[in-house]
Image 1 (cartoon, rainbow, N blue to C red):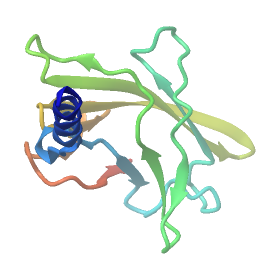
Image 2: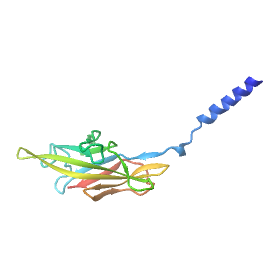
Image 3: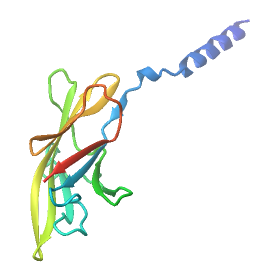
Image 4: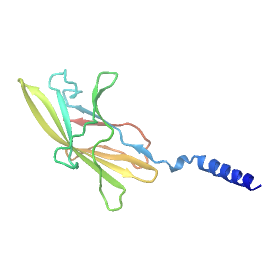
Length: 167
């Protein structure tokens, strides 16, 4: 009798612990697809097009050292051959407020292009603001050289966030 009670108690514990509570999971929404264009060139990231950037590098300005490269930012191409920078994660986040619900990352983006057989570089600042609640961690705003280029309302559906920078 004692063994039956222990087995029932054990089985009840297993059944209760296996229950799933989808509401307790935090949704993560932080993927950015960053497109760059100018008034004359719709794809500044296509190295084969004249006047486009030939390479780029990203440095975490909040990193542990002055030189803290963010290496997990690949250059991707859509089916229609438009290039974009895919940012999923990699830069440190710091609290933006004392309540701990707003965070930010700050990166230096160095873009290189070849002009008359010499490499010219320009360094821009990419700042990503995040909003955190128990249910959701999401991108709330993206600034490029202190200019807002993307914003999302609190609680908006998860998606890949397309950011277009006009240079």
